[in-house]
Image (cartoon, rainbow, N blue to C red; front, top):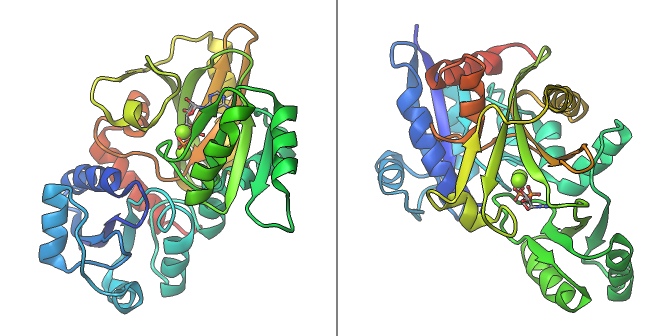
Length: 339
Ligand code: ADP
Ligand code: MG
Ligand code: MG
């Protein structure tokens, strides 16, 4: 009998449109002889759209409005064998939807509440990975709450990290709200932007030289495997939103042209991080590689990475021998596994 799959897409984060693109690819690739797939687009207001509006949103890539409150619709998810929440960013990749589906008792693709929530938060991720001994850049946390830190204390932390530094909202993706700050004069503006998007903000020392950016795909539950290493190259100050999503701005290299020892280290660290963060199903683990010093620093773990047919994660798994359609099938199998 065909498995009934609920494909959730869109969502409330700044990555709504990116999610719709990913979802179109997944929808087209789940083999129809095995799966009966129902897409539901979640509007930017967090409402679950009925079928006609869902199809319209998927076709046009536009953030539709309307729909039903999530809790009214969640009950209707009951008839499904599994959910594929192809949602990026807060309110989708951060454990919230995963909590809802866990309560509803429906298996789903990807990490559970803990792995999703911790991996979404750049500060929590750094703390967990530090305790696992995984190399990372130096960083500091800024919280917009008077009892936690004064503005002067934040400036001191920044000075201790040194300039240039990066200021980022703790819970976001796609480089939204991230600034590269060259000196103290630019700090307030960067903090303001980041705090407008999140209560928690991370300050990060920049790598000692401009880093190369390596990415590893991980697939599995209890016995995860790491893909070959990929690299992104681009001509920009850093890998910002525009560079990420403007056609032709960035180039993907698979496999990355790095020494075999560096590739082996990246794959090993990716698996260690996947386990330390209690991830499941899939994750794309991103690194900074400083060629001059040989340093390999783990930057972040994305538990629901970009998933169009041309995105890095599926391309990495393709290099490992798994076609896009085999990959989405495997992910559903992993969701159905006891874990
Ligand atoms: P996101 O989750 O939005 O992708 P990242 O933490 O990956 O956020 O940062 C986006 C990009 O900013 C990185 O791919 C890299 O180009 C640049 N960057 C971020 N942090 C640093 C850092 N500490 N040193 C050097 N470059 C950085
Ligand atoms: Mg990210
Ligand atoms: Mg990133």
